[in-house]
Amino acid sequence: MNAQFKKGILELIVLLIIKREDEYGYSLVKKISNKIVISEGTVYPILRRLVKEDYLTTYHTESKEGPFRKYYKITNNGISKLNTLKNEWNDFFLIINYFVEEDDTFEQA
Image (tube, rainbow, N blue to C red):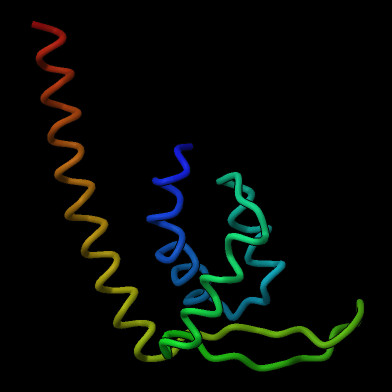
């Protein structure tokens, strides 16, 4: 997948996943990596920014497998941001899809 496409949608994906359930960083990276090729270094700056902007909060939980884990939880501001991003994504998808379908129609003619 084009790197610029990924960069533009990762914030939306992160918020969508964390809205379903609180996540720690590595788990989040693994979930995203199952569908999109990304590096760990891509997600952590997004998480830090989302915390700084009050879209996520953090808390620590003891882990049976090692040190404490830092979990991310969506805030009310984060839910509002997520809804805005989803609306923007849907609008963008419709516009792009219009041009793709128009191109497909042109090629068939």
